[in-house]
Each structure stands twice: as C-alpha cells, then as structure tokens.
Length: 233
Image (tube, rainbow, N blue to C red; front, side, top):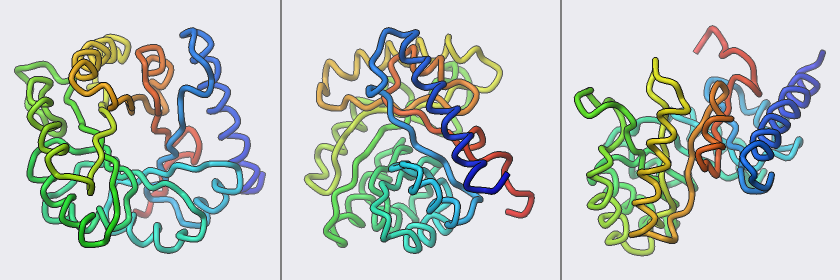
C-alpha cells in the first residue's frame, strides 16, 4: 500500500471512530473536530493529509513546527501548538501557531501576547488543565482552581489573544472515562464564568471515544492516522 493509500485508509477509520462515538453520545458528527498530530512526520505527509481534507494540524516541538508551518504555508492549514511550551519560546510560537493549546501559566500569556502583537496576529488560546490528583506533581497543566486567574490574564492581554476554551490529557494509569468526567465538571464551572470559551480539546488515539462522551469538541490524533513514530527523531 502506498503512503497516500495508508493515510487515506487510517484517516477514514479514525473519522468513523469519531462519528460512532458522537452517535453513542447523542451528539452530532459535526460537533467534534479532528486535529492530526504530525510531530516527527515529514511535511510531505502534511501535504497528503491536506489533500484528504485535514484542516487542523498539531505539533509540539517549536523548531520542527516552525519549519513545517513555513513549508506548508500555501495549504491554508490551522496550526495547533499542543506540547509543553517553554516560556522563552512562546513569543516565537505565536508567530505561526493559530491555536496554542498548552497555556498553563501567566508567563506564557505575556510572551504569547508579545509575539502575536509584534506580528499583528491573533492567537486562539486553550488553557491546559491538569487532571492529576491534587497530591501529584503537575508536569504540565494548571490546577483547576488556578484557571480563573489564568483566564483573566488572557482576557487582559487584549485582542492579540482570544480565550477559546480548555485542553487536557488523561493521566497515565487512570481510566480515561473517570478522568474526563472530572474534566467535564471543571469545564462546566469554567463556562459559567467564560461562556464564549466553548472549545474542549481532549482525547487522543487511545481514548478519543471517552473524551467525546465527556464533551470534547476536538480530539488530537497522531499514531492512529500516521502510524508508529519514525525511529529517527
């Protein structure tokens, strides 16, 4: 099977999984978008995916993402930065990312706003919320109780940034359905204060069904579409 055929087949299967999960949750199939995570895969794959109707692409390493976005600038794709973001790279990420899904501290907000302002862009922001137990060390993601202040910092940044919603990852070793049920509660409280921030990015190749059941509006899928990551990274 050729690479275009591989991607077409895998993409069709993922789209059917999303559609089936929407039906099971009593939701419309158009309520959940797909972000294909292309980290470690070449720009040629991004081009093939665009030809198959993919509109949103996710990356989590700044240097790779920047180069790939430049190489594929003619495709009109929407680029999502989804990984843990170093403060000193945030301004540069704002120069090409349309959506930054991993905002979890005020320092990132300041730098993103600066980069977006300097390049006269508007960047959509998702706040990454940690679903880890309270006693656990949060590697990435803000604690639920910190979301209010973090959201206000995005709003205060002005037109350069637009608060769009939340993002989360199910903790390793926990039933994703349980984790995403907590996320749904966090989201409900968040929406009461920020009713326009309706996006919820949750769910990956192994748990997209549970995320859709809990209200995800976007799922981030890499290996189920592109296959195992290349050995040389």
